[in-house]
Length: 193
Image (cartoon, rainbow, N blue to C red; front, top):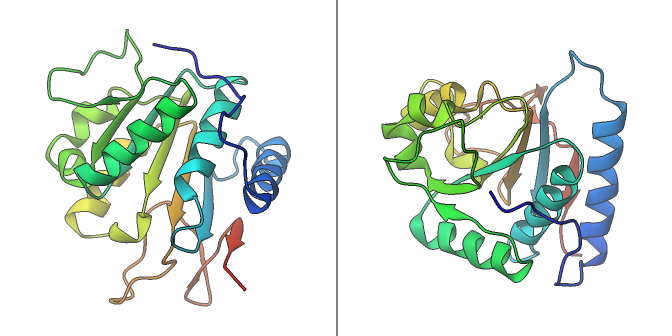
């Protein structure tokens, strides 16, 4: 796999630098039994994908050997591939034949692909994997994508949950996140205004 670097070619926005500080502080202060999930709720169009690229570069320079990104559609998957390419990082659209944990690669796939092959995806993921769920509000416990996310991502060293919509219309809970008084608890939030 191509080693990621923590030197982005696209200049980070102020909020992305602030969010990276929050991520680094969270990572450095959490205890071994603490959550492995960092939740960022960022308004649409603000640059969630680039923040994910920054987190990937940072964790790769520390203790992660591969990145798996799971998102709602092929269109968004290709946006991730292009964003990683801008920072000279290789990201491959996952296909069924790619299941060997002996050769960790950095993959992007859709929620439907994860749903159909959650066990195979889980074989690519271990304690040295950064797993990014983009637009994580599409996942829901006790529904197929949420159940698949739980199976596929249970062993990830880090889970980065990105969303512009930190709630679901049906009030179903999103896997791996914490709720307090019925509301999703975030590690970082950014909105315009």
